[in-house]
Image (cartoon, rainbow, N blue to C red; front, side):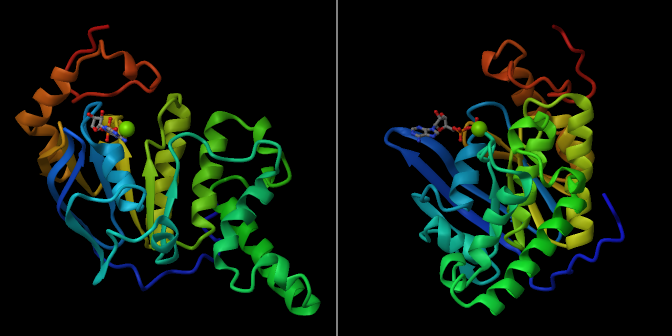
Length: 288
Ligand code: ADP
Ligand code: MG
């Protein structure tokens, strides 16, 4: 990443408060009375074994699922009950776990899609007012280039996304979210399926986003090793309940957390997609 890039610092980053959130799907309680606080400008990880409720929480935060009970607030603004596009407009951007990019379009084109939300007149309407539209389009292209350079994709802007490596594609996804100029970035398992080099690069990108943009990042993640090295705070879920909340060191030493991760075991077949090495607390020997 180029440290010299002039990225705007945001001063409007507010606390995200999750209070007593419960989500039920019929008889299944996916989340049960979960609370945590994401302080402005921090990386907050939500971790837990498979089925813990991580994706459900991610979907509640982005408005895809509605909480059965509880409240989610960004500053004083209540988010729960708002539709996803409303939440996005309040400055909450999400990058999807499964890449949702158009493979035939270039990196630049995919990133421009992220700018759409910011264009009040709309791209088509502004096409009729040529001088202003040209100015606006130039401004967007400049910003797209800046953000691409920021995540080390500056030299790949004109390549179709489909030819990029998996790690690069995942960073395009993150860059596209950044193109909406969010104050809160939601990442769902950003390193799932990555090799260790790609994982390290993503971890670096997340930290640089926090440090250079000053925005908050909520990171839903199975890979405990990655989380422990970059999160400011960690909330641990197991069977829909919050079993720990604290610094990485605190949660890593928590016996309930260790038990939850040991209990989930290596033999869980849904873990197989994750090629990165470190799912578990450091002191546990890898048995497979
Ligand atoms: P994680 O992401 O931590 O693996 P999930 O949030 O996906 O966990 O799932 C938590 C629980 O909620 C699981 O028991 C899962 O089967 C259930 N669940 C998640 N989404 C739905 C849904 N749309 N309908 C019914 N049950 C669901
Ligand atoms: Mg999940």
